[in-house]
Length: 83
Image (cartoon, rainbow, N blue to C red; front, side, top):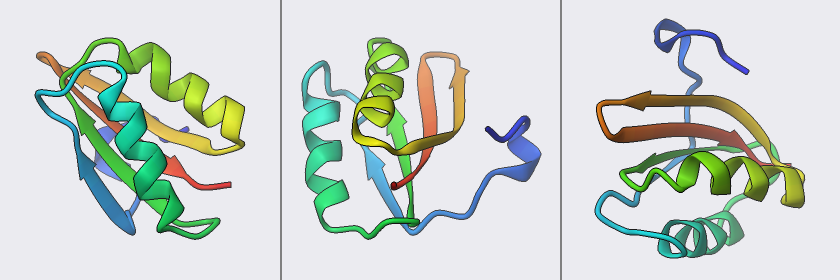
């Protein structure tokens, strides 16, 4: 996992789920991932605190790598490399 915001990974696609609550962010991620290929990186922005639990489980269950996770004043940022 990347250690600091100074070295954020490049992303191939972005998904903004701000304002949406469980289960919508994960459902939108499932749809977005279907359009992507293994090895590509998805950047996800969220406002739902439940994503701190749901996104790591999503990655673990589906074999994706959570490269970066950050919380900043009610905003959550994730970078996920597809497996």
